[in-house]
Length: 268
Picture 1 (cartoon, rainbow, N blue to C red):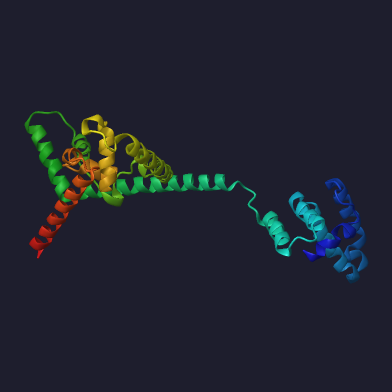
Picture 2: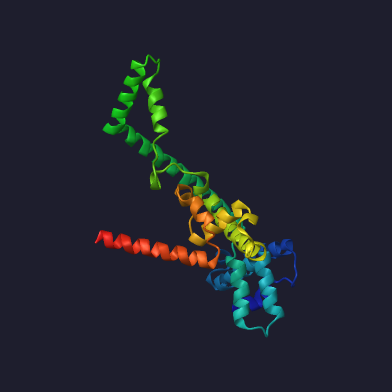
């Protein structure tokens, strides 16, 4: 930024000049000092004019330059920081850019997941086992005197197909932007719930605690997500054990450890 010390002198304008005055001064000096008009001896001077105009015609850069002149005792590092911040600072709101990027990626992700699911369904329909089931059900329908199309049987049978993993049918909560939103919501709600529990239910009787709060506390203690919780057959048993009480949790962990050791022995 050393060359900027003489910008206003080179551009022949006073500090605080308007943009129109700066443009007018630049045009006049360009005509006078252009290398095509005065030859090579004007090249250096002309470059200085170009550099001066680039700074003074940009409000942010001009502000950084004025700050440089008004605070000569400030460290060079601070002046460089102000300059580069104004030159390279993103013009678009980064929050808007990030949000739009996540939305775009979410649409792409959801579309890809739908395509993968449809592909998986197509492969299921091509298997001999699936075709055998369809033929058997179609034959049974005919034997029962039902007027049914084979396509209807295929459609009803596909409802029974459960595809898991990456090829499963995408849920609303699987979309990235929704998943990110739910992630932060769950963190906030967990903090709120733990505070509520400690203040209101820590020493309460089982029957005095709302069932939904007991269930949520049990899931937190066992570190089980919602999908796995729904598939568990012993949910009611776990809830009734009151695992939020320290002695009950210790007993439960002891039982799980013994079962695991027994499983390992059987496996050996």
